[in-house]
Image 1 (spheres, rainbow, N blue to C red):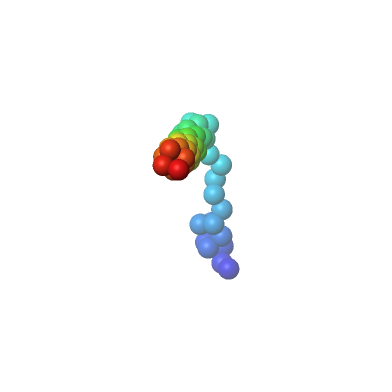
Image 2: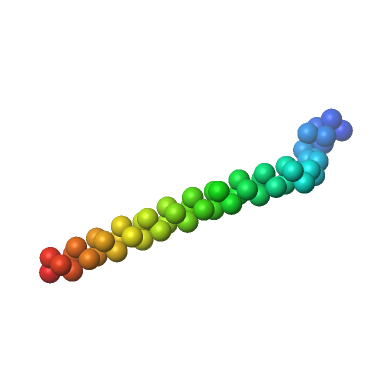
Length: 55
């Protein structure tokens, strides 16, 4: 590899503001995943309740 190819691979550290934004974005993604999982749990619970009511 040549030097200019290494330059594109190496990333500079984030500034505090950029790190804060990235952290917030990560929190949003994690919260969205948690909400999706909780909705799925509630849907499964409701389906199981319906099944038990039928039987």
